[in-house]
Amino acid sequence: MPIGAFMYLGILSSVAAFVGGGVFTHILTVSGQRTQWVLDSKKQECRELLKALSVTHIALMHWYADIEMTAIGPNPKILPSAVSYNDANTELGRTFGSLLFTAKEVRDREIQKRWNTIQDDFRKNNDREKLQSEFSRLSDTIVGIASTDLSWCGVVLGGMKR
Image (cartoon, rainbow, N blue to C red; front, side):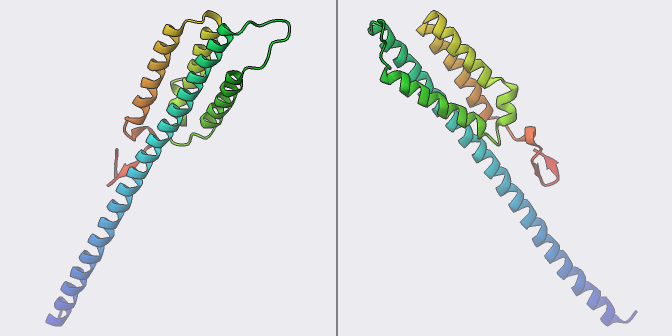
């Protein structure tokens, strides 16, 4: 092989290594950005779920406080707090139905079922202390979902599962 061919191969291999390095760096950067985007989206869903649960929780307490203070006679009136509770519960249902990144974890931890049980128990027993305690435990579970890593969804960074 002539010397020029070796120089040509050397230049070609240098260019290939440079381009390959650039492509590899780009893949890592894009993968890292995607990972961060998924993490941010997951946290945002948890914030939205916590907000909807909090609004429903407060509306439920106000509604029952109004019931206690209102004498229900033969023609009970519709309490504004009951309407607020119904609206909040409807929005909570929409929030549960719109989850993408946390749907599996929310389902696996039975968040919606637990909330329904908490509400039913409160309606039967009107135990505000238990309502608050159970609501706090449920909120802690959602915060835990927001702070977990992405291994649950198989996000890959640099060829390794994160």
